[in-house]
Structures are given as C-alpha cells and as structure tokens.
Length: 332
Picture 1: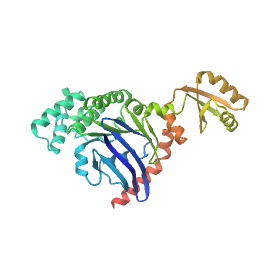
Picture 2: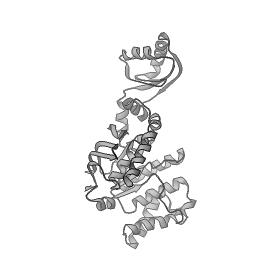
Picture 3: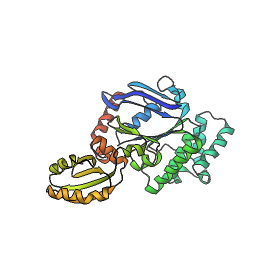
Picture 4: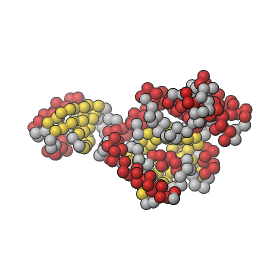
C-alpha cells in the first residue's frame, strides 16, 4: 500500500517554477529521501505534501487523502519536523510534548502514556523535566522528532533533520531515525543535502535539481549506474585533447569535466591510474592531484547534472532570492 502518491506536482511562485511536475510514490513503512542542493525544491515539495502550501497543478495524496481537498485529514495523519527549531525553550521537554498532544485533542491518560513512550524512543526520559533552553542541539532535535510522533502519525516528514549539527550528533540522530522507522513502522520522508545521510538512511532516494527529479532508486543502484571506481584528476592547463582520448576508450564507463577536475568511472581503478597519468603526460596535461574512491551519491549527482551539489548550491543563491521575492509578492 502506498502512503504517498504524487502525479505531475507543479508549484510556481509568480511564474517562477520551484517544483516542476514531479511524480513518485512511497510505500507504507518506507524511509524515502529527497536529496539535492538547497533551493532544489525539496522543502517546497514537503510543504505541499503536508498541505501547508497549495500546488499550482498536479495531484498528491498522503495517507489516502488529497492534500488540497482533505487538508484536515492530511494534517491528522502526519507529523513534521521543520528545518528551523519550533520548540518552546521556556517549557520542559515533557511540557512541550503535552502541549502538542492537547492541540491534537488527545485525552489526558492517553497523552501521559504516549509522552513516556516517545521519550523512551528518543532516550530523553531523564531530561523530561529539564527546560528545553538547557538542551543540546541534538537533544532538541530528538525532542522535535518525539513531538512529531506524539499523535501516532502514519507519515513523518523530516526536513533537513540534522542541519547545523556536528558530525557525531548527526550520526546519533541517524540512528534514532532508523530505530523509529523500524520500531514504529512509520513512513518517513526526509529531505537532505548531505549525501552520506541519504546513503545511510534511505531505502530509496529521489535526487532533485532545479525542481525536477534527475534520478530515483535505492542508493546502491544509483551508485551502480556508474559501474566502477571513480578516479578524479585535478588538471593544469587545457585538458580537451585528453578528454577526447578518454572518450575513445572502452574501459572508461563515464566521464565528466568541470573546472579543473576530470572524473572517470573505470573498473579496477587502482590499476588504471598509472595508465591514466601516462596518457595525460602524452597529451601535455599536468596532473596535480589524483583521488580514487568508490562511487558516491555526489558522483551520481555530478553524472546527471555535470555539477557537484556544492557548486549547485552556490549557483542557486540568486534563484532562491527570486523565489523569496515571488512569495513576498504573492502575499502582498
């Protein structure tokens, strides 16, 4: 059974396309990721699925309810953790959860029992009576996840759940997310621009770029598309002749060139490096640095777009400002 169905979902802000006719479905209990740079359309997609933003056109159903026609039912069926913290820091952890449960009309006895359950799930039982202003960043994130689970949603949306956290805390949050997906069987949709986060957590990933899906599958299958090891060369001078040579060779599976970086996907990469360097020397290209690694989702993004996510985030700054201006114009 599908927890989410989306067909040709489109969102424009004063003519600016933020989400461009995407279609996908998510099975019940699945942990599904929207991966892409900031400004790719991930949060706009989540906001439409959560019925917080009306689509320009297209169809979306969450837990069997149309996001436009059955907004109340959709909101009863989902939990959401936003990018920006939304806790009352002057309340304790328990009080934050109690207030949320009251907003959903949970009876007193049920909410007291549920508060204990979700606090145990995120391992915050001993901090239940502590003011949230005294929580660490990771503890606040875990409490927000617990709050999103209070009313037993069928679908939980996590929008950049580890944004701004240090690497160690981020990894702990990953483990909590995996645990709750397994133990509560809740369907989870998360957005992220962290490649390793999507790779570690998600059963399937949709890679977003400029409002569209450029690829969608399990992380491993996406990486398998590249078909071997990735050899990255930092070149000096014009590498056009070397590119032409590589394009003629059968054992070069994929080839991308951006700035002064040349990336090749080959089998037995460690054995191909000496040959690659000799070919560069023959073509008068100096190699200042060589990297060898197994394919990552960053390489997949590069393969489909010709850019890294970090480069794309830089180029999207102007577009994000344009979106913000369009939204402001709409709200006047």
